[in-house]
Image (cartoon, rainbow, N blue to C red; front, side):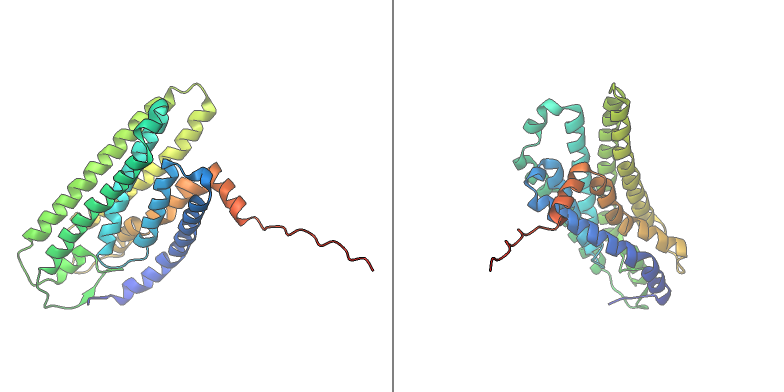
Length: 280
């Protein structure tokens, strides 16, 4: 098993532990609230709950499950952007286009496609031979860093699986951007200034986080591996492994009126009936 560098572990402790704790708390609250509040049993919150489940796994795992959870998160974010497009641009057809069965199928497709991609990438990586040092200059055993330790000069299976994954990521990102372009076009036609402002304040942060997630992930996997990684390389990995699971609860939920109302209802202390004073 490869070991991470001591310098990386020090930076990891500084920039990972606090966001990880915040992410765990936020995502657990979302899962609990969307599970027990029947008013939140809608497609949007169904996807949101599953996104929180993925984020819990994504920020907790360390080896190649990062690839699985990261791919599933990207696929689910694509589905959620489509859900928002339908709810804003085609509200009268929403229940027909997004029934519960369709939501389950889209979720299953997200997991299935990401699982195949992760298995392909992991199998191609472990097909390599390793005979050098066992120190990985990264927070976790990331694929590009493991390639630097490999004795094999033939990386064709690894390169092919990585190219497939990158193509799927870019495809999802294009769909997300296309969905939000149509959403913004519909929002700009809204007569209410307050409605436009609310829609933009909700959609733009999500699009920014997705863009940061995709660009940092692609740059980390496509950038040539250096023998002496800089602090910038470690920082880039934070953007695609720590930032999305930490910010998603804030963007999708903690700013959402329905979620906040459900949390207050769930966390509100229950008042027991007062005992009647005894006579005598």
